Image 1 (cartoon, rainbow, N blue to C red):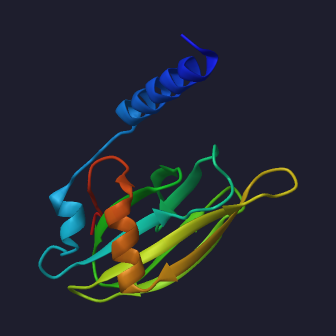
Image 2 (spheres, rainbow, N blue to C red; image 1 turned 30 degrees about the horizontal axis):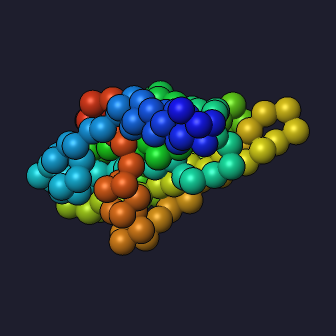
Image 3 (tube, one colour; image 1 turned 135 degrees about the vertical axis):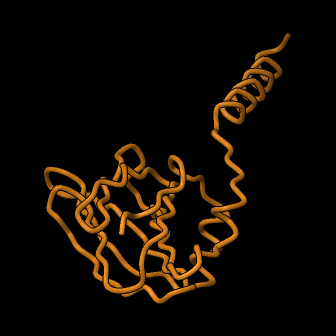
Length: 147
């Protein structure tokens, strides 16, 4: 077998292995975008930033949600009203308001910092948010905020 052919076979094997390791979640609840009756839904989505290996620690109204890596998202069914997402060790906060029957999409971005990555939080428009959730992978089970 020639060196060129060997490299091609090894590359194909590597691609197949990586594809098999990628967690695929198809969750009809997360992609339905509909909240429970009388509630709203918040999707916290990790952005496509330059920080590949680090997770972004996220909190919802002071309660830990998880550490989001690139392409991860979490769905939270929440009561209507004002809420906040907090990110990182520096406590960057993003306040937002949830209307009954509506979805809010909050993007988490990590930027390279001097000693550690720093967070940026922003609200995505409905179309962009839905596309990012559809392309992403859900972190853990769907959570319902206690209220």
